[in-house]
Image (tube, rainbow, N blue to C red; front, side):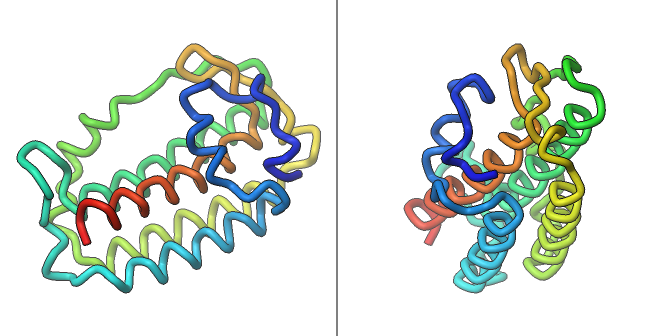
Length: 172
């Protein structure tokens, strides 16, 4: 199943900005693998000593942005699993600002963030590949809006691209 097959009924309008970043012809597992590799290559541009850099007062540091990407990855994988196993489930949102402020990401090394991202993404790839086509089409409610199991995977890939763009523009 590719992003071309997604309908707007499978995700909240807010997530459309991430879906639009996804090439429409890639199968979800391949997309997540290519997106992982692109992101890890991108991280080579970040100097470890700059992880605590924030471009303005009150903005996240590079380390906090990277931890946010990992946190979103985990949360959306949980959502996908719940929707795959229990169609119609209602799941709450989460406060990304609260997660970032308590993450202690600035104590992390670039190597540890890369390792965690890789482990979490690889786990997600295996999980999505294990779902049947029927499971991928299951819908649940997330933060008050419909979300399909498969949309969560496309959203995290687009979310990663979104933050790569922000890091390029404001941090590097």
